[in-house]
Length: 296
Image 1: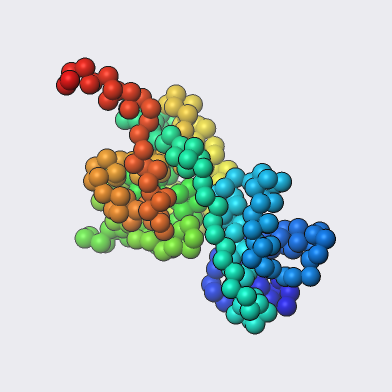
Image 2: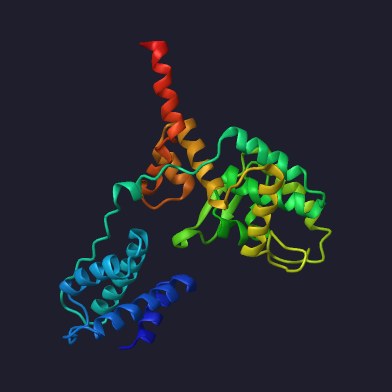
């Protein structure tokens, strides 16, 4: 069977097109690597998996997270081969272990003063359209923890404002996960209302997408990049969309002390992805050490 059959197999499992393209590209890379080996008669074996991991690590110098993404594709391909009767051997594909320094990086979240400056920076934008859109975009990531792609792909029908049932629906988040997030923040509700009012005057008011640009019915990644550049300049704070999500996660941990709640709100599949938010910045740890003089 060909990679086309593998593509059809992935489609039958209702995987996202972006994931399907990524998985088939990885298998093409694997097959090219395997075919270059002195003896490439086997399609895939346990030994080949181990050697391929070593190749990705030493020759390609892929980051552990990149290796694990490729291994996920290989794992799914092996499942396909077994399902279609092309492979009888039981093969285990273990993820690459992350080195301590790579796994526990110092968290890149924003402090209260930085958030205050960003909020002030948003309000300095003279264009009503841009000011209201920037505010709504940033607040969705800061107050609800949406990823950039999730925020950009929201549709108007994903914003539910029924009294007692106010929520934002993420129909296809990372990994294809569906999520419903309660709209409890008054700041965020206000930002959404102000943007929708400004959006109604746009020539793309009939678009199904929540975020439109002045030139397109669907604001894309370039719009988000320009937004961050604009607000960074007016606020004096350099930040990224993902830092806004990191800040949301850190605040949840600080307020609840409950990693399970944070995992659910961040929509992480595993708690290991959430554990980074329990880490503290160096200045916070240094402050703890300084205060020991007062308690010893």
